[in-house]
Amino acid sequence: MSVGAYVQASGGQRAGRLIQEALNTALTDLTRRGVLVADDPLGRSGVRPRTFRLPDQPLVVQRELGPRDLEEVPPRELAALLQDAATVMGVGRPDSLFREALQRLGRVRLTTGVQQTLAAVLSLAQALDADDDDLDLDGVPL
Image (cartoon, rainbow, N blue to C red; front, side):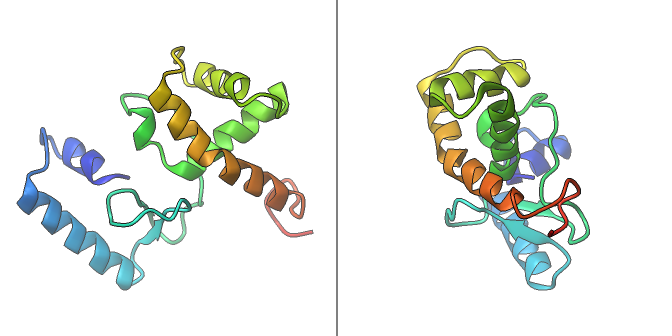
């Protein structure tokens, strides 16, 4: 979940500097103590691009897009979506793969921003697909 998602879920409209600092401090502390796990496979800096989950929760949970912007979807979730789309489309041209992924999210427009977001996770999707070759259907090593 992103910081913005936490603020919106609490009924807030936007996070001012003090709210952002308090959330960043709390999330960093909870991560250090092992209460939460932080993940950003794209290696971006800061708290904002990270995805937070409980240690016993799965690494990826594919969900409907809902009210989220594509940029708010965790990278591993987008990578899993691209993997699923590639099983139907093949790996061929990225634009075709991106359009299939968008269709699965109920979206149509392949804007420059959408292309950039999906292109950023394409190599992650390919890497995860290579890793999956060593796992059975339940994600257990062979």
